[in-house]
Image (cartoon, rainbow, N blue to C red; front, side, top):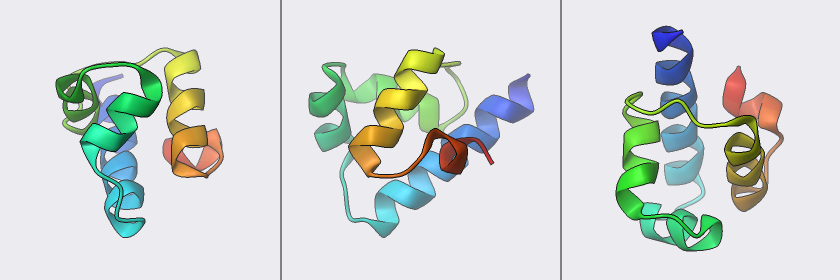
Length: 68
């Protein structure tokens, strides 16, 4: 399970930086604190399916893309 969280975080960061989107911007879109986004990227937090879906929408990608 920890590996899944780590992979999600790595994908999130890779996509976010490639699109030049900040953690602050994602956090504002989701209505969460920037540290929450950071914790996801570092594999410290296991987000809910709803959060994963919202992250994908904020990045303009499919949830699949974040989870692969």
